[in-house]
Length: 310
Ligand code: PGA
Image 1: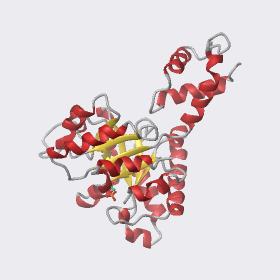
Image 2: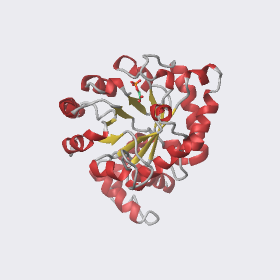
Image 3: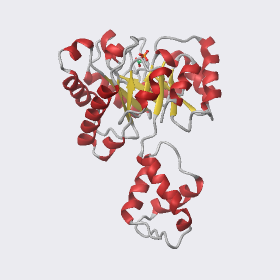
Image 4: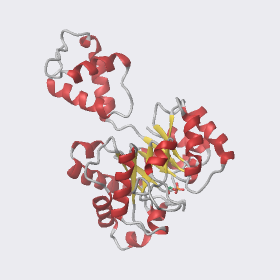
């Protein structure tokens, strides 16, 4: 069977950005195809035997793999390493459904990253300074976080925007700092209760996306987290209909600015996600995972949220 060139190109494209590796046999075929896509002849290779697998893989990669990211905020002492170990132990049961990321306070990144080596949980950070080094007492550079073992860095969380007056321009610089250090940027956006009451939600989100996302954002280097400020730590969540409307709006903006990459970028929902509401929220169109605060501090809750992914 000959697979049309368009599908081959699409498959190669997916392969380059896929967050998870395809099966070994398919991987070998793809590597050969990446080297010389124009002369790759599926008929003359063992590809025909793999056709079903390949088509299956296209379907799988068409769906964005969910990410469940834990934001520990300013919580966690060395003693909480045991809770993280429990997450590592339970991770194998849920990684069929989602990728897992835990962002502890900066003081625990190195310890967590050491324990996570070779395991199915990635470690991230909660903030970074835009500069790589210098006279900035108390700040931590993205390079330092990556050196300690962080693979992703949250930037622009509403608590940083509110507590430290961080605006979109600074958030954008921080996202670029994450890339400079080799980490994925998780950029948070979200409206306050007052903005929501005034009917400004979509305008606020558009402004934050325009201002906070650097040019060059791609599905591989950037994740958007939509976190309505009024839902964070309150137990309140928007309805599934509201989440669908807002995530659809974000997807449209991402696709119009970043084209194919915008269509594949993960959009996480955050704000009072817990085991009891995770399945409903994660089933909403254009929700590609969750950014979880309070419920990420307990391994059982964090893993149960991941189990809620479709
Ligand atoms: P929450 O926090 O899950 O405790 O509401 C979410 C966040 O702020 O990332």
